[in-house]
Length: 206
Image 1 (cartoon, rainbow, N blue to C red):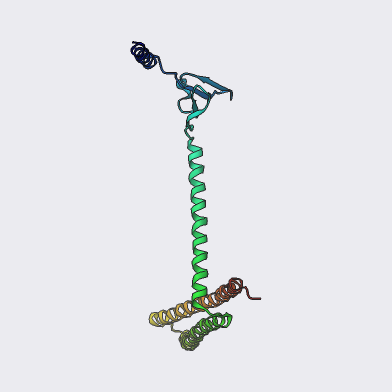
Image 2 (image 1 turned 45 degrees about the horizontal axis):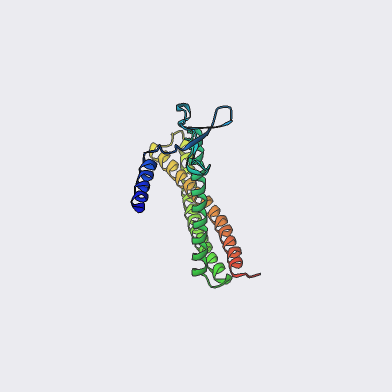
């Protein structure tokens, strides 16, 4: 009989606990004055603000970050792009180092490769200068021919004038090519100087 009563009491207590209202969580937020407030519901005007939910013991059980502004989102995007570019530069540097070590065994190899490319550029410049010398000789003859015709009282023919202009353009184009090649030489020397320094650094050479 006693056990039956005890069983009934347990059932009643269980049902009572199930029917009791569940303790609502406490919501805390920061108001517009920067003061922390708490309540059983989050005010609608703070729906987009960050807030925390606490249980009845005061422990945080959930946290919602506030929505970021357009300016914050734009800054976050800018920072992400900066980081991506830094990562790309770092990866490129690692790749260059690997190629440098895989391609050359010592500093002499690097300098030999540099000298070979410089020699090729010099040869290209020399050939262009030789062509220019021939073009200039042809131009000088045509200019002299035009001057003779003008001294004779006859204007230079249209064909002669076009030939003179054509030669001048070719010479100018070749001169620009030569100038570009000289710049290429200087850039090449700088790049290989960097390669030598980096190779020594990677190999711990003096």
